[in-house]
Image (cartoon, rainbow, N blue to C red; front, side):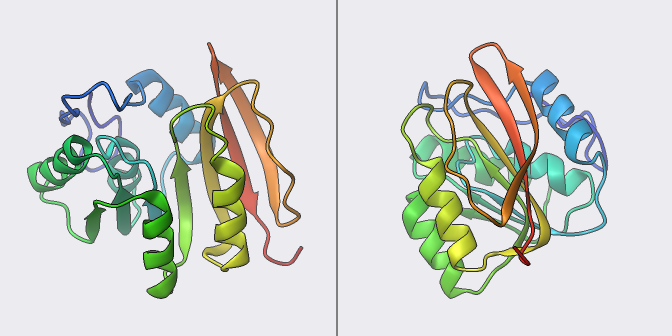
Length: 184
């Protein structure tokens, strides 16, 4: 696995030595960032189910400023820390905790996000509650971009301030791209 574009282009990333994570392939990562970017002028990123940290690192490489990468699995957390150290990243914070604890921690810190990557274990029904929490606690900046990777048959509950902008299916999964409009 590698960084596709930007400041750290072609740099190799480590992947967790566990079957509990499934890193986003380079091809899917490239397609995703072509849909939402491809480059950014700053911004704060949340990668809530970080795995290797690859999606968040890609966003940093392409111009975002700050990254919070969360994973409760020890091997994933260790890999995220190693990848941050390997690239000598600043303003990148690995958090080893359950996603609910992480959301509460970030809420208490009053952090707002411009980009959120949600790639949880498939089919567990986690996305709706996460999106409601983020919206209810005003954790998005205006026009924030939220990327959800989930099984393609999963449907999400509508939230008035989130608009599904694009959806792209890949095999059994789909990338769903939402934008936040806090005025709705």
